[in-house]
Image (cartoon, rainbow, N blue to C red):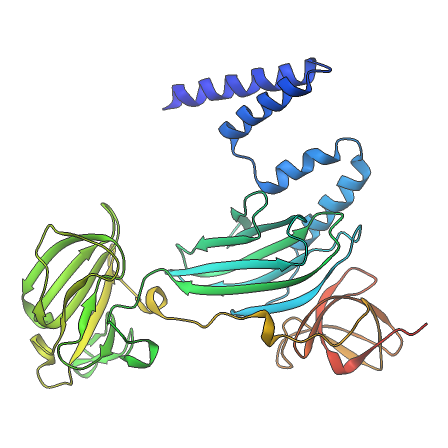
Length: 384
């Protein structure tokens, strides 16, 4: 494998040399660029950066705005939505920090009036050493999906191209990695959660209990292979589903009956068995105990908990201009909530740039470049 990587590196280097040395060979250069891109897989931002070769000053301003956004501290809770306008040559960036849990999938989307105007999205994960890049959207794509492998704090930076001049709606949603394990049921059927005490505190619940009528189908939450079926221990009649060759083991317990056999390959939605109360659940209402294991038990709730996505129709706009004036003393907030941290304060007649609106809260930038949220009642449009 290392030898192959060396060959790719040499090929890329040769292509770049030929591109640089061959003046007037635009067709050849384009061909070599495509070959090099196929090998190096550049991000959408890196591809766009090539368009600045004749305007380094403009590129530096655009790049500086992106670098500064990494230091932004604004926090939101998902799902989150924001409406606004992209303004050409403004070099505005939109950075949001939020918590995600293992088993969730971040779904970021930017709806624009003009589909031809590009938007660049990059996700970062917080590490001890700082923010580490984790995912990017592809060129021309206004949607990004990111599977969360580790619970923690994450940041997304959204930056339009320099000439972008369009309305936008940013939506930051999350969905579970897996389907729901009981047919026809959802969050409301979950009656016992991860970590709850069992046997008078002698042990903790290593899963979630989903209550349903006896005989309700229990289904595969993902494609996989049945690794075990049978009756044993506290779980009674049970099915174990392996998610991938070296993936997680999914545990379905207290089944009334089993519909699959070991070694079978199943697809999402296939029936594995039926809700019951076997094992140590004989004295409780029928339910499915659902657990996830990989080098120990994992909280399965984020893997199946369903969240309603935000939609543009539920978000209003209060101002027609992007420059606003403060009415009086106004606190700048870290999040769109009066209980969030205060980042500073403005006084009467201070001006701010409106980046976007999250219903009653405005995402603004001060003349000094500070980003914050401010309540819409505290500002007014600049007349004249």
